[in-house]
Image 1: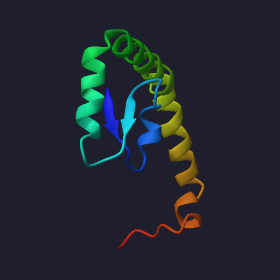
Image 2 (image 1 turned 90 degrees about the horizontal axis):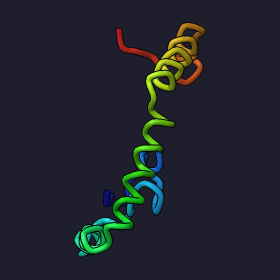
Image 3 (image 1 turned 30 degrees about the vertical axis):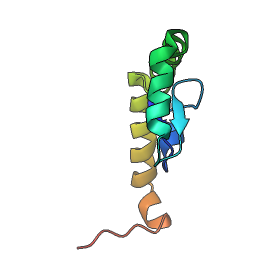
Image 4 (image 1 turned 90 degrees about the vertical axis):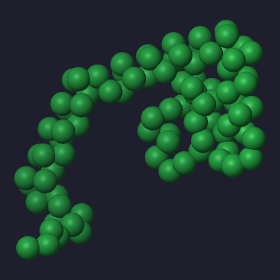
Amino acid sequence: MVATRAPGLDQAVVDGETALVVEPGGDALAFGIERLVTDPTLAQRLGTGARAFAEREYSLAQCVDAYEALYEHLLLGGAEADGYHPSP
């Protein structure tokens, strides 16, 4: 995978482990894609790393735990403490 640097990207990919991260604009994206096409070993390594990352960070158990923690936080008044006030 080739991704352009953007806010929040670090939650989805790790540069050099799960993807090639390039700066937005210019020819960087095209060069990143070309690098993966011409280096199948790198592409395979990043693909394997991406799968392991996804299985580790986004497993069903991880997602359930994260939602449970969020709901618990909200039920204990966390939204108001965080400055969130829904409109009536």
